[in-house]
Amino acid sequence: MKRIGTLMACGALALAFSACDNGRTGDPDGGPIVLRDTGPSDPDSGVAVDSGTPTPDAGGPRACEMDLDAFPTALFPRCAAATRTCITDCGTDAACANACVTADTTPGEMVGSQTVNCQVCLGYAQAFCIQENGGNDLLDAMNCCAQDNGCTSDACVMSMCPSEFGAVYSGANPAASTCLSTLTGGPYAPCFATE
Image 1 (spheres, rainbow, N blue to C red):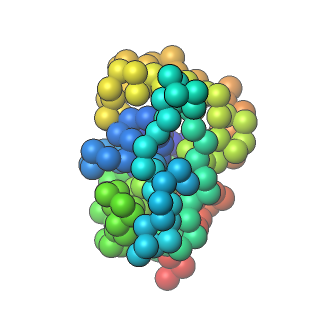
Image 2 (cartoon, rainbow, N blue to C red):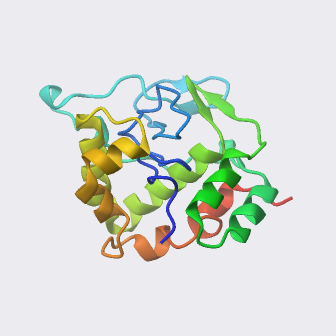
């Protein structure tokens, strides 16, 4: 199974979630992004940004349990067509694929304080796909473990949350066949330019 970095939740390609780096630290490892509709819209992009997360004490869900909204179409594409070719040429070599994404030259788009680039787009696509295809509970468990342990990198998530991480990226995840088998087609396709 292919995964983006550590998944989106905290991944090199980006895990695109809401636990590891919460979209506010600028973690170059591509931690999660937070493009939730819980805050005001960024006037330049029309994209809602997170202005604060309810706490369990306030009766709301934890940030790590909040569902992602679909990635804003106004932000597509975030990756060059050449990056898709590079990833495809890597076959099953995850380090190679991550290097392709890191080398992508598509300019990032600022949404609030988050730079949305190729890595973020792919990570978010992976997280959203897992959420929408039966793996939401597994993803939430990993994200909450990462949040509870202050993780902002893949290494931290893999070290501090090995069983949760393993569950998200295993074939037992109901979303695995749809979300973890390719990094260029299916849910990831909109991230790439066509030419």
